[in-house]
Length: 365
Image (cartoon, rainbow, N blue to C red; front, side, top):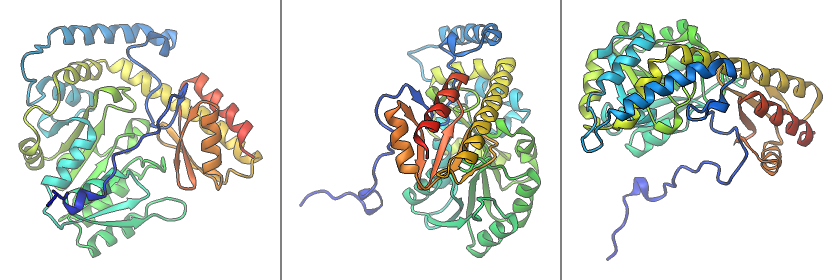
């Protein structure tokens, strides 16, 4: 008798990013600033990039390749603490935010617990919920993709949710829920774990919950280095929470979950505050340029139904021709993300944005 996989993984398929070689990759919300490529930075930022690379090299030269990395990520967490003005004892480092989401779903919640998400949102919340045999309960956003905090909290209360997880600003809608509204949700759900994924908050910084973590023992804020900091390649994320939750996360994570190289690079970049600030500002400017171009397209092309005002590093567009536009853009050498009847377009360099807009004017009717 042959071995049979357990039911919960029998039909799972691996995560499938867009395959193929494309000169313009505007599908994954990555930064256009490659720390390892001087030419990706404008001339005025190259001295800052050079200083940061010197820090990176110094840190990498100090790595003992034959030893396990610091299991507590001490220096890395201290750099994060200083950068974001949160107590270091509230910070847990992870192998990308995905590891931290999996730990929350797999370890902080019992099998069968109910998890509420606000759809559309980042698909990995539901994926890890299913993987760890939780009950996923999606709450549908309004047609304009906004969140009614009272309605969301009421839904979570009705479902007796063990956790509510949502991104803010939201991936994929690009919209931000004001901090006061997030607080309303937390106050309405004192017995529910509320996880706010702030992967894109550098592009809407006034609404961050980081400074309020100490006030709510049921709050976890997630952060990533993959977006504004341009470090998608090293897989580095953080969870910020009250000390009881932080102790639990640090107890259940793998002993050496963040490798020494990622710790070395992440620490160097987090300590380079001027470069971090420059990249965030430049990406906001890039977003505004692309937003304006897409709004011009909206006025002239009937296939573009709506362009949402973005608070991230991408623009969300509604179109009944999403399949056709995505396919034609790939023929032009440009990869973007199609999500049902929507397109998610990453803001890139000035040249990339202009090339994308030029291609859209060509292929959109």
